[in-house]
Amino acid sequence: MSTKDTTVPETMRSVTCRGIRDYPHHDDTLVPMPGPGEVLLRVERAGICAGDAKCFAGAPMFWGDSTRPAYVQAPVTPGHEFAGHIAAVGAGVTAYAVGNRVTAEQVVACGTCLYCRKGLRWLCAPHDIYGFHSCVPGAMAEYMILPSKSLLHRVPSSLTPKEAVYIEPLRCVVRRIACGLGWFCVARLARGVHQPLCAWRELDFPADWSCCLSWPAPVGGLVGIPLYHLMSAMSAHGSLFSCGVHAVERGNPQPGDTVVVSGCGPIGLGILSVARAASPGRLIALDCSEERLALARTCGADTVLNVATLGADAAVAAVRALTDGGYGTDVYIEASGAGASVQQGLRMVRKAATFVEFSVFAKPVTVDWSVIGDTLELDLRGAHCSGDGGYARAVEMLAGGGVPAEVIVSHELPLDEVVRGIDLVNGGGGTEASCKVALDPALRG
Image 1 (cartoon, rainbow, N blue to C red):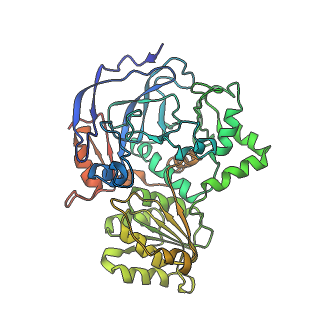
Image 2 (tube, rainbow, N blue to C red; image 1 turned 90 degrees about the horizontal axis):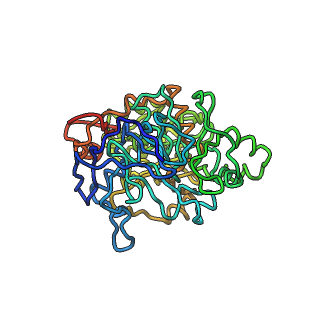
Image 3 (cartoon, helix red, strand yellow; image 1 turned 180 degrees about the horizontal axis):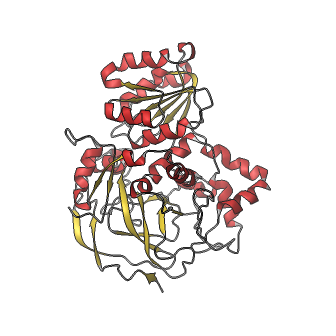
């Protein structure tokens, strides 16, 4: 038997991804009701990710090509960045109640595949991401279902809606920059628990960080496991703790390093904010927009360079001139999604540097791989979404005022302006500049 807010209507407004550039808006979609172990979320904000925008435009990684099948299962409600309030809970849900403010990790992991068993749940083989697979409809609607295997996180009331919708993009950044707890540790511990460690309680953010885990049997249902209990268990299992540490090291900048972040969109600005805390010797931001470079300074960049104004050759020379002995940057983080950024990065890094590739590209990118190996011996690292401590850290940074989300989130639009929002993200807004674009289901167009 489910419990729900009496104000939940029978129908709602929503957006459907039916195909490339085919995202109609509807006013009469039936509001789904949660089944056992599920939660109905009233969506407060839904972010438009660069991935959403490239999906709309027809990028092969979403719609397939001669070497890979389509990832998108259309028709589906898009949207994997969101926050909201619980409007109803299904039978068996005890960890949450109507009115709780939460977000959820974008990958709804199966818990049984090779990657989940290895603790790499963000690489789960079925890879059910909200808004792309039909079994997990996304957040571009007034309401959405969070399945029983969802991994939920509390959102403190102190965060504004703009800050809340920025948790997921910032969380992605935290994993690529920082070192934290791996899900191998958490999964091993959680699966060994046959009784709930505790009931979920209201937390004092940011003093008392906790993550709520949702796992299949033997834990069962939506059982809250505060992180400090897991930390205590890990302290007694040193080898178990060490297994998780390396899983979340990607960029790993060291104090005194020169770090270059290419691309100052919402993700790049978050990267700058987090990288600043790593005490780099110099933090350099690259972009083609003066407005975004101004935001980059706010987020902690020591030096900003407009690649469009300088030109590629001059930008490479400028970065090298700013590094110790002119050897090149220690860490290069590509967050622009532009092929030219990959090529320029290979010219900016020193030998044995770390190159982190973050972006979703509209088409394949070609580079000379001999430069990566024979010439530079680069540490080349890909990065994908992860929940390893990143949500708690993202909330901490936002709650502490460490990230100017109120400025980064430049637009809040109604659902029926989703195509306009996607055009803004894709740079097709004409003279109207944007940074992070979000949808507010409560707005009327």
